[in-house]
Figure (cartoon, helix red, strand yellow):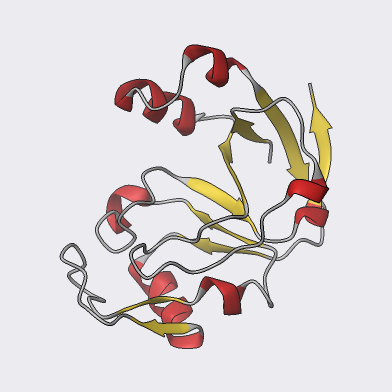
Length: 151
């Protein structure tokens, strides 16, 4: 699988920001975000939302992951439920968007001890449960699993 990260032409492991939780979000902060190059959903979303300048969007890195990387794939509500069960993080207030898990989300910091990353592959189904995670994408927790940078 080839992934694409936009907004930069370089990857500096020394500038990698470890994953952390945020009380106001249902997605992880930090890490290294990308999407599958075959769809390039990030480019489409940024253009639709006017999120990044055209100059920033022209910068990108293509990469693959090492073969033994441990990536958790979220494709169904059950996949998300299993993550919340194993790595629970109770919210102090209910999400106004979540219909299934209003008081809970994933403790991404805890999960990052066991996994190298997580990929959401069915965002439309899980849009409200992972509100703010706007597209199918991957977040890398462990930068050492990035194997090949292709250009």
